[in-house]
Image (cartoon, rainbow, N blue to C red; front, side, top):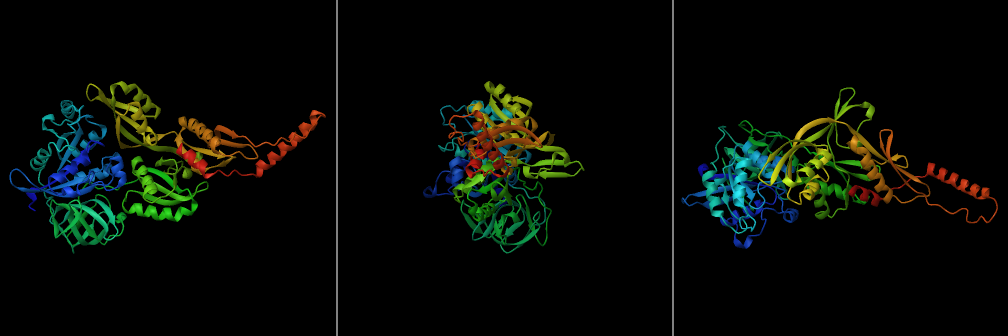
Length: 596
């Protein structure tokens, strides 16, 4: 199609503001999908996506629309994930577009992720079309949202289109706005093929299917192309587009989006955001590429040791559709053989674990999540540590740096005091606040990533009774007083319970773990000491009491020394038993503690 009649756009929004519902409605209105095939959340193919109402994998789709001016346009929608963990995927999807539909819920207004996504879109210099969705709700306040768009995001409120994706109100107006407000694709001025790899999925029959946006030149089957950052030259087997099922085409020309398949067996061979160039006459690569690195690490172990090979195969299958997920084999004295897995963030970790349990029917146990610490040794060398087991002895450490995040927290005015208390409890500092409207504020804080891993988001929701929201971005490293907390059972260190914590929190965490272990470790014939230690210093202790046999039961009458002699004899026996006995911690104990 003529480049002047192509429009590439994306939809950005906070979670649950109606992004997927609107894409369903656009597909239906343009006749891309017949009434018979129509279903809700059409572009979300995973059960997990449908259940949670989130988009995990981006998905492009091509629609054709005849506008009121009589011209026929090709509209390419590149659907994006909405969660902060997938921010790089969102930025790559946006760089393949010229415009973005910004959806704001008429009842909830501008939220934390709305702000973050608008900044991403503005950085890419996209034409932003604001939509106020869900106007059919009884408590919708369109005028307030128009004011918020102007005050918070500096977007003219009168440009916003009021619509309801669920009821189909304003869909025609949105399609006309895409045609007239989103600019046609421009060529980069290169003399041969330049295309951006937006995402990739694994297909059993075709190998890796790469989603792509062509900027300059054309891509057709049979030509040789080079993936610039991966350093691979591949032969293109098939090109096509989605409607939303894939269909083949002769070629993709400048400005169009679609997919290509080639002789690529593994998604790890294709880097997200890579440039595809002509192998014979390569143009300069497109800008903005960077490698995706995991931010959060956790150990995943099979509950039954015989499932190890099964788990290994299933992790490999998961990695085929998710190149950002990484894993490597590791073993633990307590848990046996398992894998150290790297994730983009907490939601990503939760999804991978949930998919292992559901889709592959695995019984797994995950260790306490940790982040990457940068450790400077006394000889000046730097090391990156993602597992507490590998932390050097304190005498060799000069300093430890931990990753920091910049958090944008939105909450009602009534909850500011409670939110500040939560931020300071998590060792965070408030940078500044911005008043959003008469009822809400946005707090910009700097916190350690390690502190927001477990319950931070849940705490925000409970403090604000569900009205708070949070988004974060990574903000470098900072030196901090971190220590390794070891748990000793009968003087033996248990590596599964080791963690790197801030010195001020080590004692509290040690006490909590020791108390929990005391509940779950079964009693032995001798007393078992459970201790939390930092280096050689014990900071907390609990004791599992020994079973006792009443050895004095057969003593009748006589002097007290007879009883004492029997008790002393028993005491000696227990002491000897303790020196040679070992404590086997049952698997249930690990599960109970790691869940806690």
